[in-house]
Length: 152
Image (cartoon, rainbow, N blue to C red; front, side, top):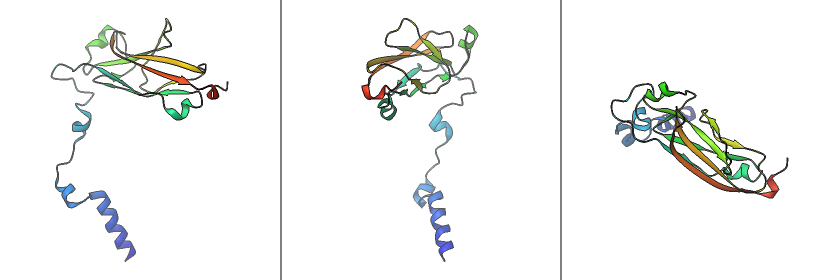
């Protein structure tokens, strides 16, 4: 009896309610858009960068974890003029800390992680760049590293 009850409950969780089962399923393309491996058949929309503020937990310990995502661009470690012809478009980010005259490029798609910053206010600029390092979009995030978090 218990086994039948658990089986029925499990099936209900998997299948949902009868009304949900009757609605059309949402496809991967509905959620993700066109397959990233197929050339687009129309002009690409502008690339866009979305940057979150640093994660609060690590920041209290003096570590800065900044999550970001790109829309209408795939972050890939491919560079140079020929890569500009790839469709859908590919690129990477440039990261500048506190207005430094230099930046670094990152094509991992992973969060930006900074450690060893002095306590106090800081600003990080993240620039979404095409495969030839031309800026497409940018965002800046300002934050304060607490004095209690800088134990180095």
